[in-house]
Amino acid sequence: MFAQFFGAFLLNNQLVSPETLAQAIDDKKNTRMRLGVLAINAGLMTADQVEHVNVAQQSVDKRFGDLCVDLGYLTSADVDRLLSEQPTDYLLLGQTLVNNGSLSNADFESAISAYKAKYQLSDDDISNNQNDKLSAIVKDFFHFNTAENARIYTEYVTLLFKNIIRFIGDDFTPLESCMVSEAEAEYIVCQTIHGKYNAEICLACPSAEYIAFAERFAKEELSEVDEYTNEIVGEFLNVNNGLFVVNESNQLGIELSLDPQTYIHNGSVKYGNKAFCIPVAFAFGEVEFFISIT
Amino acid sequence: MEFKDIRILLCDDSMFARKKLRMFFSSLGIVNIFEAADGEEAVEKYKENKPDLVFMDIVMPKLTGIDALKAIKEFDKDAKVVMASSVGTQSHLKQAIVLGAYDFVQKPIDDAQVEKIIRNAMK
Image (cartoon, rainbow over all chains, first blue to last red; front, side, top):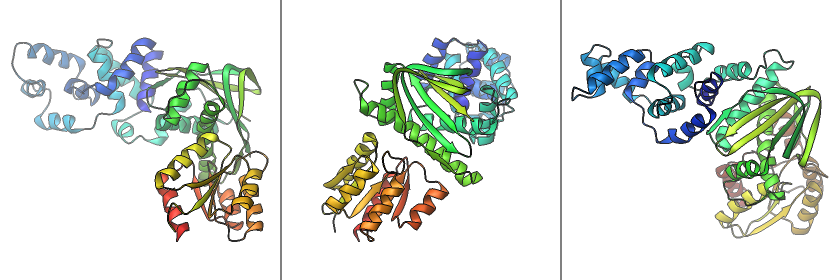
């Protein structure tokens, strides 16, 4: 999930365009990490030093790592350690953007440093997928800090993104949220959680995205929106909400219930209290999640 | 008892959820599979088909899975009803245990867990 929010960070800081980011997300599965980016990320080399080695490599027939050692930038142990580490997803995204020329090594250095500083992230946090750090990013990114029920919004949306990665795919970028009093779309699926508090949750999008989302969850091809497609998308919402309700019960002893899902075609849902609209840009298009907790 | 002999009733309001479980049951070689799309239908189909094992969702229209479990156990105290739901909260678990549920499966369903439950029920 750190990769998706790193993508959003690059987008929000206008370091990449939405099209470039979408292409890089698609390409990163074929990307191989290079030592320069790994060394910059680890804080062992600056972008200038990496460029220096790149230039030096043009006139000397040596491997990048050996040259780094010769020039005194890295030790052999550094090279071995960096090359043996499993690359994290956000690094693959960064490497892809460096490879296709969208970011220079210097751009990557400043972006990764600013991203880590903004959310106080260490490499260990990222490698271990630290839940509290993920929640902190979600809370800050979607401006839940000032919302009433900030904890619930944060927990819910953090779980939602984990389940999107688990069931739909990791090729998405969360976009800036906004507050709305109405959700309107070609297709909307809603489910209400009720008990100590009430949460109205909707997923909304046009038909092409609705079908693509359902296809990803069901792992089968669908040609049109029918009752079966509705139920697939509804089941995603039901599974996610169920897991949230179970977490609340197990961790905090809060007992909540779920209502059956409702489906709307070419219509809208009005919220008494304003809802957070959380758009998510997938490779197949944009899907919006609406969440109102009272 | 073997997989080809067991009779299973599958109760879920989601056609998609039923299809997924039915496909898994079929892959095991189970052929006697009955379906119900709500709690009321689940009770009717139980009385009609007397299955060896029931997989029951909780959040369903007309009659919830918990109410359907209660009705089925009143009809047949030996009924083996597995609650298969997305809402495995402490209170639902307690309710299901008190009412005599055979087991509980949290959605998304883990095929290995379901197979183990079926094998135990066949003993």
